[in-house]
Image (cartoon, rainbow, N blue to C red):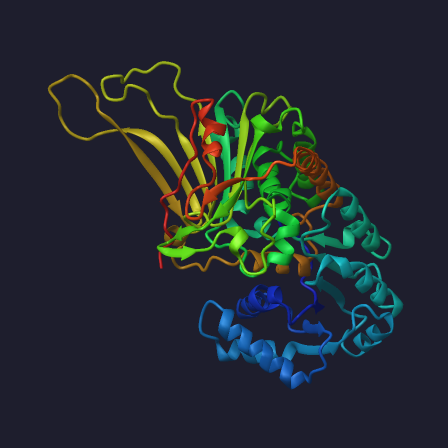
Length: 497
């Protein structure tokens, strides 16, 4: 999914450089790219924020954050190289006149990458400001963080504000799940292995489960999360992006638009969920007080700053159907929630059972084969198959047991560091590759599907079902699968230290 692009210098302009995302993810990722010698020697990093501070103070701030949020002890040689790249510009992002200061920090002969690690509400302001100082040309790239909008209408407004100044080929809408190694591996797993490529449809697959569980609560983000909810925060982007990669048809090539064309077809084929079918298709919940990993935690309505009348969902389970030839009759079960027992993200492909059981003496009902793709923790791929138990018997029967073929990335590639998703995505932006980024029509199609669900919830005015923190969600989410004699896969994987 990487095209052959020239390795050129750029000015990486980081708007919101003092914000939480920059401190925890973006600056540490740039450091890792520096350590791996993947940045051009002439590339610069320009931090932009509204605070008036000296370059020396900014450098000290970056160093502090790298020490605090980096994975390992800082390599001094790497830090010295990164330090030399740093610039700082104080910009009032809502004042177009303040952007002229960027002229002192960017070189027109280099490609400029503008990363907007800011609230989407000011994306338009930043684009106008860049336009006002006449530094936008066809080579400039702009990176947009999610969420892009609150619904389809607001998403269109934000995208139009950016499109007024940037062509679609210049816009990189980021979803960090698309940078995870196992998500990237989905394409090679499906299309480079005939064992999967020829068995990836309704003839062989019974159902698919996609789970993204979080053990944390809202972590002080009440203002944002209560307005968004788990549907907007996780389903509209992360889960639907994973679903589209699992379900898409083979692209003609690995270029950006070929892949995104196929993902869009999946989103368009999703059967609408609305007031007529929502009760049998979706379960939503809200966590109450409980225990997570042995620690007592408050309920959602007891969090600091909470609106005790809130009906915002912290858990969603969905039975989604894709109305096309490949996936007719194969349900995709999506599940995501906060205050779950563990933090885990995984895709589980359940293959159909054997039509006739030759081994009834050993297994009355042969279990299905499963392909488990672990996104986190302990990224890797696991296949469950049936295997003969070694040894001799005098019964004449053949004893079977379930066995797992486990490809753990941390074990199989023990000498290789697994990069953070943002490292991969930042590198792709600098190279000019859009394959791992989301096109506008994908965003809007996903919102179209999600909006009908949100409208149905609003019309019903029913509160979400309570579930105790530290559990896997409301009891009804079990029934979502149990009606078809299925059950949720619950991973026992624990990340090795």
